[in-house]
Image 1 (cartoon, rainbow, N blue to C red):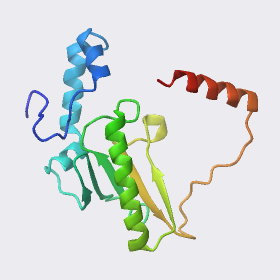
Image 2: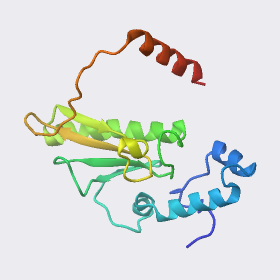
Image 3: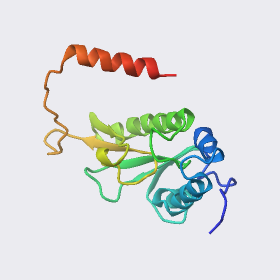
Image 4: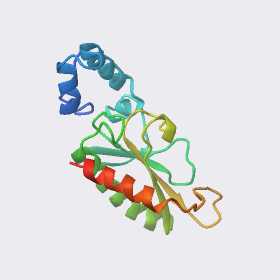
Amino acid sequence: MPTGLPQSNGFLGEIPESIFRVWAKGGPGGAHARDRAMRDAMDCIFCKIVAGEIPAFKVYEDGGTLAFMDINPLAEGHLLVVSKRHFANLFDGDDAAMGQAMAAAGKIARAMQGTLGIDSLNLVQANGPWAAQSVQHFHIHLIPRKEGDGLGMDWPLVPGDMDAIRQTGDAIAAAIS
């Protein structure tokens, strides 16, 4: 197993600048955290699929993304779009890599619509343990939906406190850079 980041095949990509700055300052774990992150990437099942070390039913590939069929599908045609760069989720990723994944998801969804004869689809992207993220590598689920398929996502509509909603929205908006 390589000891450093393999740059030639691009499946790990570069260390995000924000993480590098933290490591360089000796912040959370310093070099130990960097080494742990590299080991995590080397052990990542999606990185291994991107690198061709594990087989997958590939559907689409471009310079920054790979899409393949989910082997535990919720519906016929359920697939995953993954970034070729290893980062865990939206909190750790960069806009360019996430944008590439979303552009690929759109292209694939339109192909799924015609191929599978669907008019509905769930786009699911989970971030962290409480959001049920099962693989710590940025990925987007495309789940075809049909009438009567029995899959849920019906969240109850419970009116919120409008002042609290506005205040939270204002705080988030102010933090966007």
